[in-house]
Image 1 (cartoon, protein in one colour):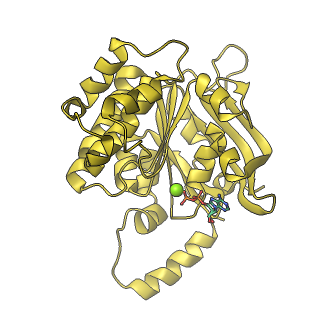
Image 2 (tube, protein in one colour):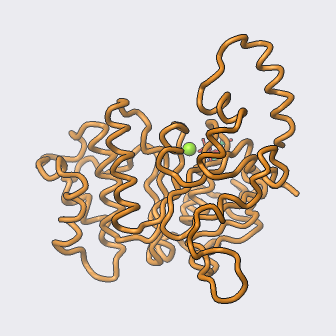
Length: 293
Ligand SMILES: Nc1ncnc2c1ncn2[C@@H]1O[C@H](COP(=O)(O)OP(=O)(O)O)[C@@H](O)[C@H]1O
Ligand SMILES: [Mg+2]
C-alpha cells in the first residue's frame, strides 16, 4: 500500500473526507459524491519518470482542501493530473482514477475538463502580459457555454476592485495584482472547482493575507470548491478545512486543518516551529518521520 496516510501516527484515517461535514460522505446509496476524488493515481513523465506513486485525496463539495509539501513533492503534478494539463508536458496518469462529482475524468483532454467546471490557476500567475485586464478576463470566460456577461465582470471586480482601475497592459500590474487577475480569470468561467497552485508565491506578507482572505470569501460566497497547493502551510491551514501532506510523490499525512496544525512533525517541518537544538532534533525528527513513510 503506497498511501502512507493510512498508517499515519496522527491516526486521522479518512478524516479529511469526513471531517468536512458535508453531505458528500461515504454512506451507501443516496449520498452525493464528493466534488473531486483522486484515487491512487500514478503519474509518469516522458514514459519513464515515475513522479506520483499512488496519490489519493478527496475534495468535499464546497470546501477548501490544502495540499502541502516541500518543493518537488509532486503537488503541481497532482493538480495537472486533475486538470489534464499533464498532457502538455508529456506526462500521463498511468494508474488510478480521477472523478468529478462521481464521473471519471481521468485523462480527458484539458478543454473537456474545463468545460466540466474545473479551472487550474497555474503557479507563477500565467496571465497574458500584452493584453489588458479585461482581455485576460475575457479569455477565462471562453470556456463557458455562453460568453461572459456583465455579471461575471461585476463579480470579479467585486472581489478585486483594484483590477477595475487598471487600464494598461497586464504586464504592468504588480505581482499581487497579477495573482488577483489569474484568480479572477478562473472565476470568469464560473467553475465548480478551482485548482490553485501557490497563490502566495512572491507576494509580500500583507498581500498574502489579502489574497487568502479573498480566496476564503470566494469559497464561501460562490460555493466553489478549492484544492489549494501551498508552501505557506500556515496560511493554507487557516483557510482550509482539511489537508494532505505530500513527500516524494506520495501522500504521507492527512487530516483536518486542526489535526495537521497540532501534529508535531507538521509543526516542525512545515510550520517552522522548533528551531532550537537543531542537530538533535533533526535526528529525532528523522526517526519520527520514517514512521510516516
Ligand atoms: N514536465 C516534467 N517532466 C519531467 N519531470 C517533471 C516535470 N514536471 C515536474 N517533474 C518532476 O516531478 C517532481 C514533482 O514536481 P512538481 O509536481 O512540480 O512538485 P511540486 O509542485 O510539489 O514542487 C519533481 O521531481 C520534478 O522534477
Ligand atoms: Mg509546484
